[in-house]
Amino acid sequence: MNIERRAIIPAMNKKHLALLLALGVTFTPLQTVAAQAKKSSVARKVEPLRVINGQMQGRAIEGRFMANGRPADFSFALSKAEIVGGKLQLIGEFRLGRQTRAAETVKAGIAGAMAKTTDPWPSASDEEPEKKPEEEQKQGREAKNPEASGQLGQLAQSTQDTARKTPNIPGERNEQTQSLYAQAEMATGCGLIFLSLNIPERLRARMGTDARPLQLGVVLAPLDNKLGEDINRRICALVQMSSSKSGETSLTASVEEFNRFLASRR
Image 1 (cartoon, one colour):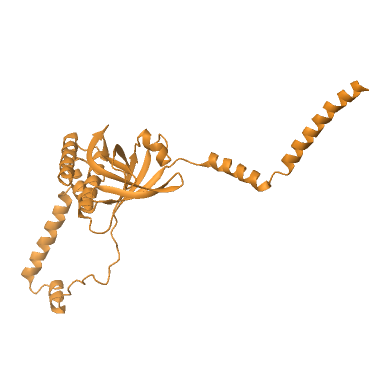
Image 2 (cartoon, rainbow, N blue to C red; image 1 turned 135 degrees about the vertical axis):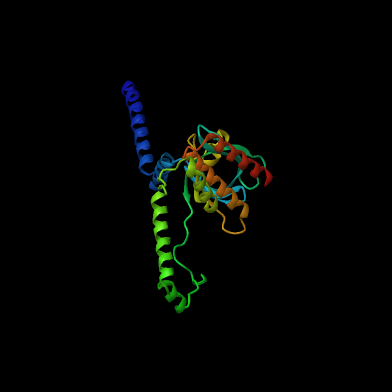
């Protein structure tokens, strides 16, 4: 009898233990289980930071983004430019947070640029062109004497001859027309510039990004920003020169002039 009792007691203890474990799992709050499952699922789906945006005020680009779920301020102050592999690259001081004194040197390639567009619709403040008196218009349409008619005919003939002798400018940019395009870009600038930032490793965890380049979209601050507009126009002209593969000497000289301009505005 004693041997049978000793064999039955351990078997009953094992059954009781299994029953208690099953009851514990059954009565675990469903909300706790669901919260833990949701938390682990969200952690797996978090994507690294890929794009941030900022406004250029002077030579500094400033903005705000969400870093690991929290808002963070940044600034990227341009200091110089260089040509690497035939492409324009900007170098500047990157700061994360408004109270951060130490800056990291960051290099940024040009990922793309969009030219400025002008408003094609006239506004109410636009001045209307002056209208000529009806008599002057009539005199312009009709010649008063045969001698004037002959002069008009000679002028029309010479204009046609000049048009036939003038060569057409091809659509493709070349060394002869590149300066014209560069002057146009200097006059208009870029409405939007995309930079590709190489973030230092020590800043990646704080920003929630990885080793891949971080894209920065840059627009101009609209008010009291003469320096920013000048820098924008010069960058846009350099981008056009580098993308059109203009003369290396001309491009290098333009980059050096841009660096002198930045250094004088610090």
